Image 1 (cartoon, rainbow, N blue to C red):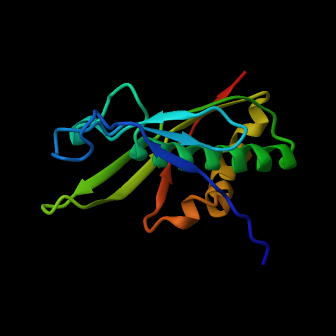
Image 2: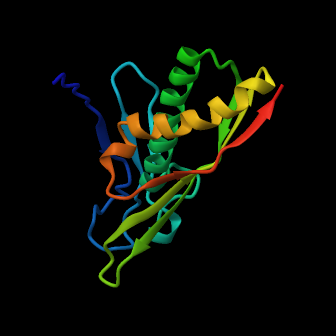
Length: 155
């Protein structure tokens, strides 16, 4: 089995001078860095005292599932002779928070809108979402089913 290794650096940038001396005394801001790539400014969800202008882990988790699915989908369409002209996904996810503050995602639904170049491609293009879901590394790493509700358009 081939293994792939990944490295990221997360640096907390939210020390307002007194560190974590109190729950309200620090920001949840941080930088997400990968060598030779643009940094991403992160924070926690505003519900957890985060900065709403920065990406939070829950959004990035959802984005990871969505982008992984899209990349596999485009790959399989290309192999099948399906010409995709446009692709946009408005993914949704539900995270349940427990009374003790822990939580977990229970559901992710992808809502890709895919435009293909010819009408005869629509049915096969729609079917390929299932194959993409089977191959997506991120979807295969979660403990719940990733649903998809595609909308198909023709140029």
